[in-house]
Image (cartoon, rainbow, N blue to C red):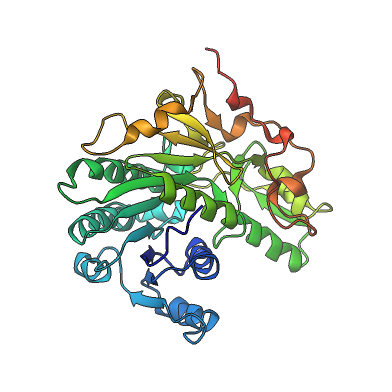
Length: 357
């Protein structure tokens, strides 16, 4: 497989976040891009990242201070850019419930600014990161991400003579990312806590490592023709099992569900599965690809028709996954493994089977 980044300029919005840093490091160490631009609004994080990636060793790395709410700044940053990975977002669910207008400004208006700047500046591809909370959303964060998905997909219809394409990657909670419950639990254990707080015993969540997130975006960048939503086939687990994986001798206490939270998350709804396919990629991973419900001029969306269609009633929901006894391997906390395991047979979800109603 060739280097799609050879001689290309790549810009990552939210490039100083957990995913952004991992993706930038991947580009700099595994590929040969002409230039990698980190676009973010936090100057201190950029300063820290500059120390991690010194100019002497990474002369093709650039830092661009800016906010995706600022359309003019995006236009300047996107000049000469080939690929944009849009990872910038406000994402803390309870906080956004109390600050809805701020979420709208960044996650929706910011996404529209990305679209306009990308088309006008001749960017070739834009891949935007979304979340399982965008499926049947009950919180403001999920609603803004759903709107972002709709904006990105529809943007393929009005690129005119430009070659810009837009696609979305949607996945679940990232193991160890900033704001994740795993670092929170580990910090409590480090302080000597023997009872960890959980919201509800029934709660389940999808989990993905940063590496798997990066691989999903790379797959989408290589294969997208415009209008797709890429969903990785990833495991989930109960929060109570996560507690035992992190601290086998700890107990837990119920503190109640926070504002905007669900008991279970969905990565692929029954309605979406009606126009989605299952793809086994060259990297050994499996992806679901949700196809747009309307065709775009000059977009070769027919390439996906050769792949396996999903069965009627298919739903990819965290609450319907098989329980896995070895929680340490499940969430990538095993000290000798350190990452989510490959697609073990025990990870096969109930939702791979049709749901009869």
